[in-house]
Image (cartoon, rainbow, N blue to C red; front, side, top):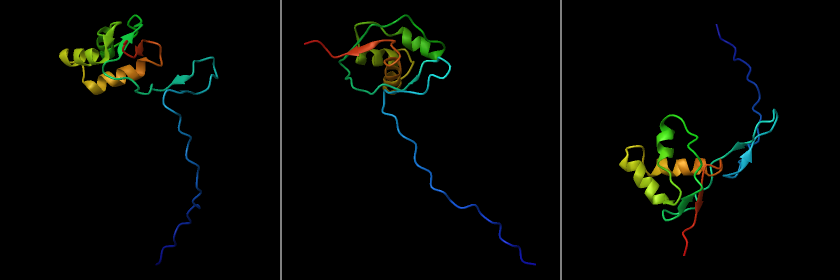
Length: 113
């Protein structure tokens, strides 16, 4: 006895989703909620200065990392502090900074002079 092949649905091409630029706000404001914020782009160097640090808004493991941030601290000093305290590495530091900037937790400014 020969089995009949099952009919397959035709393949329809679907367009690729639009890619949002880094640092852009996306999402709707359907229920009055704030729009989602993407990561900031990395445009700073290790000698740039972290300023305007807000009181610690974090919980869990990130709370200990955020506690190391101080206004006037260099990006390289924050990275060194994470490593010295066993809380992360350069990648962790970069991700923390990229996350906090668009959320207004601090600013990173170029060196003076």
